[in-house]
Length: 110
Image 1: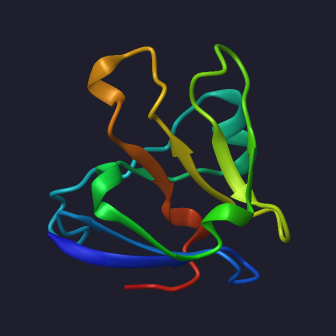
Image 2 (image 1 turned 180 degrees about the horizontal axis):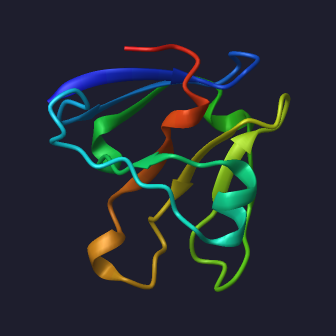
């Protein structure tokens, strides 16, 4: 497992997450083709919720729900950067306990 860091554009939201290394192709980066992911340009990795740590700004995130309303897309309320999708309320049990982090928004690097 490697630890990666990410921020929104204005750096109000700072987080880190652990996933298998991106450099060894152990972790797949997904480009979802749903309407919101396409419009926001999401490139997603899927760490467990327990492997995500917010260092600042978690309470400052806004959210947008569409479709079945079960997966809030969370973004910075200040700068609008799409940060992650919360699968905690997913209709599919196998998805719960994970988030989809938008690595395209990564301002912090590894």
